[in-house]
Image 1 (tube, one colour):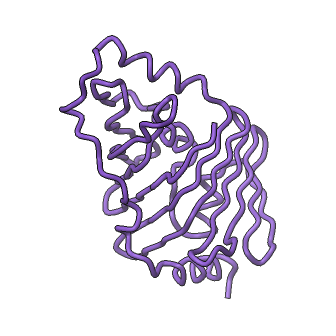
Image 2: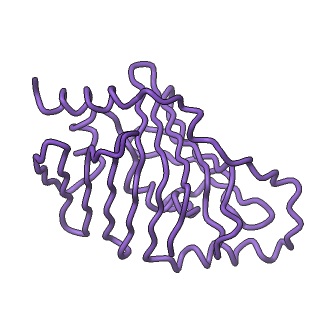
Length: 207
């Protein structure tokens, strides 16, 4: 069986948990925010200064053809350097992705090493799904990245954005934030592109 087939099979095997497992926090009602309007830009400015952080959580992908569930550990060590570890519900590592400004390396569960210059392309080749990783590293912390069509709530937290790239149109909606962190960071969010849905639940943040 081709390597891609093994990867897809492994991910299909871990897709046994319901997608609703990614939503364990109650969304914040943005209409109830009492923060002053002048604080809106301040939160975005604080987020833009973050260059090092770590978040652990769960990831769910759903389309007409495929359902995937995994846990993740995202370690951002500089502006252009991050590491993503995907594990199955039993804690076994399925994939390790290392990204620097010059090279992308992926090691799968079987120990095979893949090298590329584009994380989005290599992920799609290996597991058969497209994940906008180049934008996701901004969206995960609540920044719009290259998106110009976005809305903030009255606290200055990113509420929704729309982004088009390579003929794909993404809508990202933030459902809740970790209010106990400074600055506040996303807790649950979902990305929609056509019939494809990605749900992210960030259980914890370490700044």
